[in-house]
Image (cartoon, rainbow, N blue to C red; front, side, top):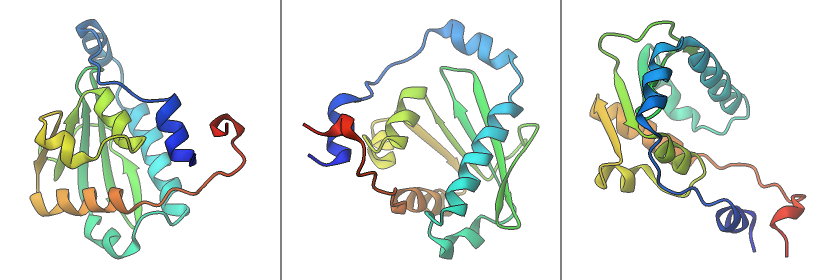
Length: 156
């Protein structure tokens, strides 16, 4: 059994929606810490050279919003000088917006669901520059995560 198969077998992420109270509380909290953390994660992925470098120039001076609906979290990021940067306020008109519940984003990150399927099932909303949306989606699809061979939890 491959690591991916093992992960999916033991850690399948179900579709769920958090209670509305979570979003009401989350929306009142400062949003910038989420942006700082996600920018650091994306920059780590850049540092590991996991994203196709050909398309990175197309992200230059673009602003992104990730809206996690059932948590009240809105993460605003910019891309400048080849790096992701947190934006400390949500831009009035971001170039690209991704909206979904937490479970959809987790399933994308775990490669249990692809963005196209979620989009066509209306679990993921993408707004803004259509061409940029396709570029970002294709970049994420092209990421080849390193293989971990020493993870005994996935062995039988």
